[in-house]
Length: 211
Image (tube, rainbow, N blue to C red; front, side):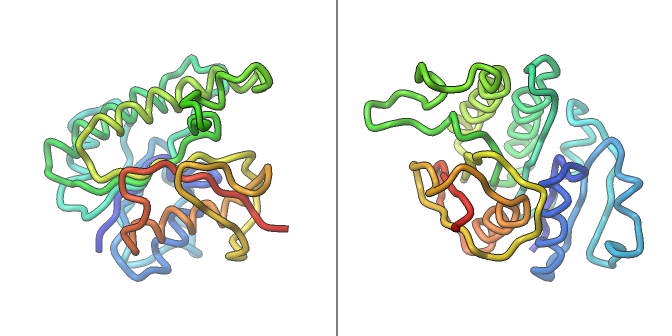
């Protein structure tokens, strides 16, 4: 299997790279500042590092072409001004459709889940106001995926901690996880396994580390 990872230089993206390489397939790592991925710990015949800009249609299309799946951990500012999450996702979706690549697992935020009344969690009065701008970016990214016709999974993470995977977490479709945080390693492991096992098709995932 060949996967292409976007947002690879971030905290979750680097964990996606580690766990994807551990699965034994080929990995294409796409980003603007990918030079630090060429260190001795990650050098491998499995890894193809691609320097590019998420809004560059040609570069994104060439990176995706011939892949079996795409993983996205696109980041950006928390004030929602840079649009990397939403418009970056729009470009990835467009290039997947153009190249015939069907499977996508993407990282989003907890607020994109909905309650039993169909209300987005971010629209509740108690939702922290400081997370709303980035939440709206995640929401736009989710809508691009939901309406794409692709085989998507959207991972709605709570607070993300900088920690490696210990495989001690819980994930479920269309519901928040049992806690308020998830390690970057467990989050990446969940995303990589969703691709490998073809789980959570056309669903949002809530997840959290277990005590």
